[in-house]
Image (cartoon, rainbow, N blue to C red; front, side):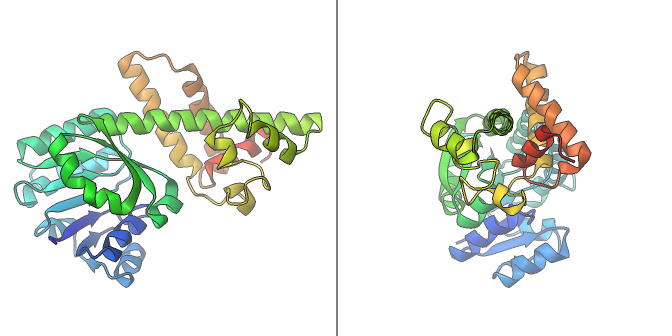
Length: 296
């Protein structure tokens, strides 16, 4: 198997890259964090001196970066990875970025003779560790076909959402649903507390009734009903409130650009902004229930 380059070995990228190593791939990784590189190297990955060195002999390059400006700066331009890679290399960007930048980078990839997918993920750190992520991929059919065997190692559900940028569109729409639903579930539990209704009783009823949703049954924001949820670990982050706010802002940017009406998405973005600005950003996004209770 040809080497795979993996750029961005953070909380999500590192376990994703390690799963590729476990599957027998020669993975050459780079990150600005020495600690991240150490973890990756201890798992059997090959540590590259820099991003350019990682991609020189690779036929597939996976990137997992914080924002659109980082993706664009790394890949495009005279010193970018498109210029350093061999013609026909497949680039898979798993970052969550704005749709406009994703499409701009995809066009630059095509001009450089590369294959390109935007393939953001859902499933959090737990899904990355377990190899059960959902990938939402946007790009040409041949790029998706080439990427799918690799994505199957890192994920459980792999969906081709359409052309360039559609993976990012799917991700921000999905996470807008998630952000809104978590607030709704949290508000219901806060109201139940005021009314003297037990957490478990509300869960038992709503989880089998019309209020059922993922934010309730898988990620319940109160301790007890779902033992695996972050609420049972003092809201230690599986997916931080900062990251949720980022995705909600991306959704609002896209709504403004496209002329879509998203009043609940806008309100969710505003509430997460308040929560994050008051110190909740590093905690799990389900911890917004504490903000809704008026807790510090």
